[in-house]
Length: 76
Image (cartoon, rainbow, N blue to C red):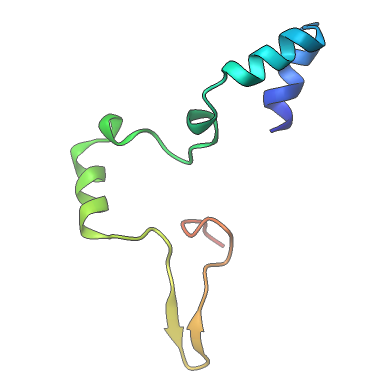
């Protein structure tokens, strides 16, 4: 988020231009964690169909385990 605001501000945009930039930005695209579905390869779309959720839960001797981070696809 800092880069989205700091970059235009560092390029000497005024406050009004910076506000206009923020209002005109496509925040869904900026904050998305992956490409739009239409841009994914066939295999990635097929994986999405076969695996309904990208959040990984597990079970061990202690019970249910949660993902190690907010993004379920992160690795340790």
